[in-house]
Length: 235
Image 1 (cartoon, rainbow, N blue to C red):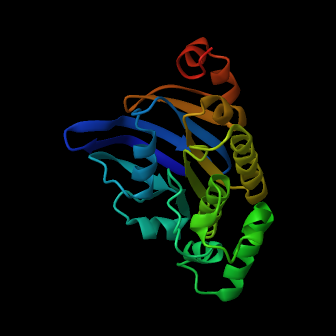
Image 2 (image 1 turned 30 degrees about the vertical axis):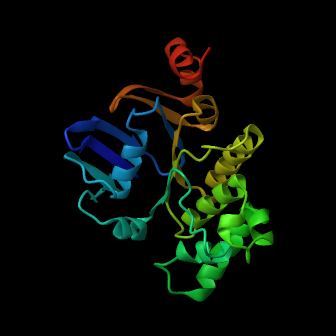
């Protein structure tokens, strides 16, 4: 589904990604873990087209999308749930969800997608007429994920979905990520500092260090790696 070839990205003179290459199949959960500043969020933003790479290419279903705009990538089937949620706080829950379906003009399809989001997150249905800024942190994260699902993505990018959440809510979010992936039969790329939780639900995973891929393997094998456990799991 997704193939990234020798991707290098700079912020000014700072090299954030260094010749990163990997491929993602059509279904499963794939995580990228690493310390702050490793380049995880930059990778997501580059895949989404929000950051222009210095060199390298991004292919989606064998089509080169390196030069496509973010809306064009959404149309192709890629959706990003950004770090920090970035919901529209001054409007309602349902208006946030409708914003996620802006490329779809069929009202019946949009209504079906809203219904699907409410099935995943019943709390959002209860709060559908409430201003998004009044939601709890966990509810705002549900809304951010729900909004990303409204474009019916084939590839869902989740950037730090557990950030700032209480431990019990973190577990809920990861359970929902797994449920969404399995029920929608899509691919999910998960960027997380909570490495243990991310690796536990991942089919395959990668470790980034200062913009470079240094390790990869199944989630279970990386959890068992002494190097990963010492550097990222604190054990």
